[in-house]
Image 1 (tube, rainbow, N blue to C red):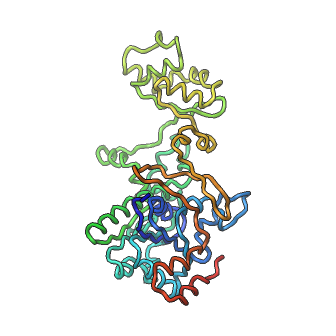
Image 2 (image 1 turned 30 degrees about the vertical axis):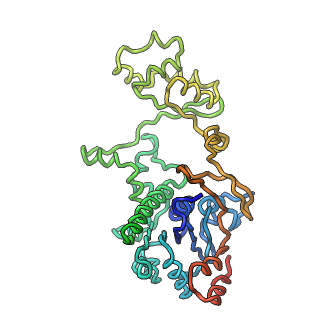
Image 3 (image 1 turned 90 degrees about the vertical axis):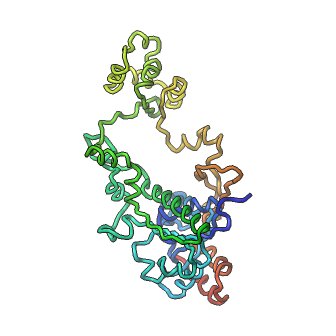
Length: 391
């Protein structure tokens, strides 16, 4: 069965999450993604989790997830032979995605200007913390720094305490999604109009784009949104549940919590109901209602009462979820070193397309295969490059 990007060759260079997640989307959609790694491997190979907590280059859970459906080629981009091989591969590719520091590839004769000479419809996407220009261009950054500088951290947490960041690497994954969308749009233009594109993606700008309503509040009114006093999730017998109750659902919520007592205590008008909702007039009754119920039981009761609610799900809840099971979201993939493991699937379905998943590549597993298939390098040169010792 065909997939949307069958026949599209993508080169991925760099390290970590943002570029790898961008191209992971393309690989699932059918692209032939060739991951260029140094002989030491992508640093994410050294990031866990690992089986039995033993570091192993071929068993990183992060790497195995990000690099399904890809092929690995080891090249030394500081070496002339490696640079020549990269140029040869890019001339046969539709897309290049990289997240090196600004200027890194150009200094080696591998920037967009150089690579597009041999492939005029090339789409090249560069992901950096702050973009290819501006006063922050060469500044260092981590997940937490771009989350803070992009404005999101000022909005997260209780206003009486220090600001927080989301768990995990939200900035990197969000940027990877923006990059994949922009890259595939540019690919369509390249195919339709015969015009290549260079795409400059900033992680900080991706974060700011995710809360654009706050920009408009500031633009319209000079209003700077701050963190609010948060209502913590409500404890149940085995976890927590959280409600999001707007004024028009408040009567349903009171009936859920108070049962037969609700009718006599309801307010007469919407303004009074909303005031009671905001002031938390049912806090004690909510705790009495929830403390002896499981989080899943409380969730089902709330949904039956048409009250927006969610229990705080941990990973065991996700893996055992009847919703995920019904949609066959999680997939099992067998890897020659890590064995059979469970992975998140692709959160989109296309009519007539059946997603396929193959294991993440071993370091340099496809060097000889890819160079022989996609370049005109001599057999001797291919053999020499393929013989590069990996860490």
